[in-house]
Length: 140
Image (tube, rainbow, N blue to C red):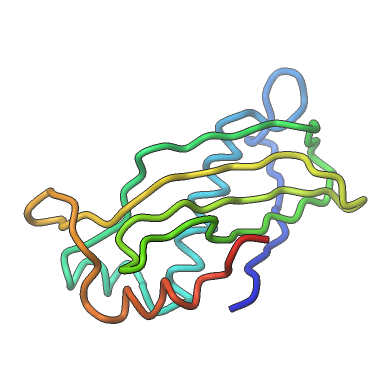
């Protein structure tokens, strides 16, 4: 997969009292996009639940560059910036741009996989995890 981008639909509830997008909406958009791409790569919530694993975040950081308002057309792209050879630890990055191609924000996350029964970090299994991570879009 070369890239994974989506157009963001900005809702009234995404705004703050200054009439631009509230900071926490960016994180919500990122989380939704990550779930969607994992699903597209074969790692649905059902697969993760059946195999007792899931993604876990160590760090999530957003750099805000340009205000986003309710009628702006925003595209969010997602890619892998870094990944361990076995796919167990990774850094992903979301880039948000407006219709003029201007950089509005970047969300960077560091994460890994957790065994949801043992509640401990785990190497990715089954093989579907490793294969999906290999197909993940690389840094833009």
